[in-house]
Amino acid sequence: MLGVLLLLSLISLVALVPPPAPCRQCCDHLEPPEGSGAQPPIGAFNYVPEVRTYINMTILKGDKGDRGDRGTPGKPGHIGPPGSIGPMGSKGSKGQAGPPGDPCKIQYSAFSVGRRKSLHSLESYQALLFDTVFVNLEEHFDMFKGKFICRIPGIYYFNVNIHTWNFKETYLHIMQNDVEKAIVYAQPSDRSIMQSQSVMLELDLSHEVWIRLYKRERENAIYSDDVDVYITFNGYLIKASVDGI
Image (cartoon, rainbow, N blue to C red; front, side, top):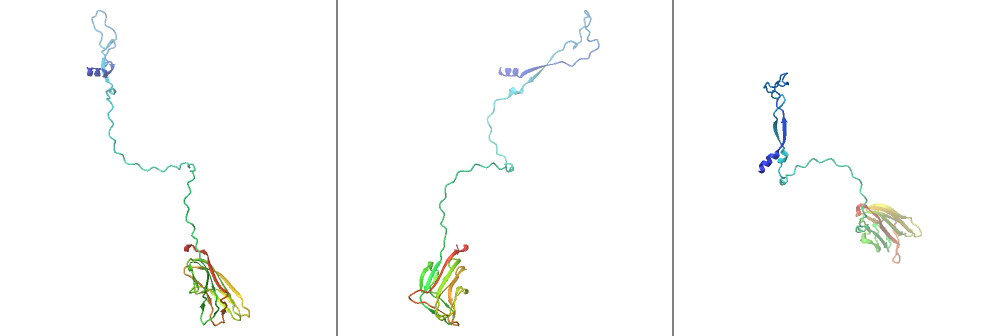
């Protein structure tokens, strides 16, 4: 019964299609004389309708099926061109203060020494030795050699003070390694005086600075005693070099 109803529901259109027109004569439109017994020509004034069926296939659609399995992803496409720069965002809030950094590394080098004994020239040059220490940071001044030895490369200031001897010449040099850098000189006089000399030198690591007394070919001497300190030698670092920090 259900199949019959379904079939009947498929028939939704009846088309009336006229048959092909038969051959006619010019007098076919005239009806035969009454009483002649002749039949009017077939197709002249009546025809048999042709019935055609049309099936609406859309009503045959079934219920929606279950969702299928997910397919394998396709290959990634080509990278597109970069987009334009977006608008600038709003300013963020201030962050927290960081931890304190390490203190600046400051290096020091300084010395101040004195001599309480007089010294006369010999046949050869003499390094002026000292017997009294006022300041000697990190032992940069070698008391046995009478020389300052550079441990921190940089620019240094040096100063020497001496007391002349009556009627004798005073002739010394401030030396950097074996090179004369500045002279301390006084001519012979009947009066003794204090003489001083200062210089700034740029030193590399292990450079030596010292005071040299000239040799005996010139009557040369400096004066001091055990009571007072007449002879001093001083030096200190002004600025360390960048490589030495």
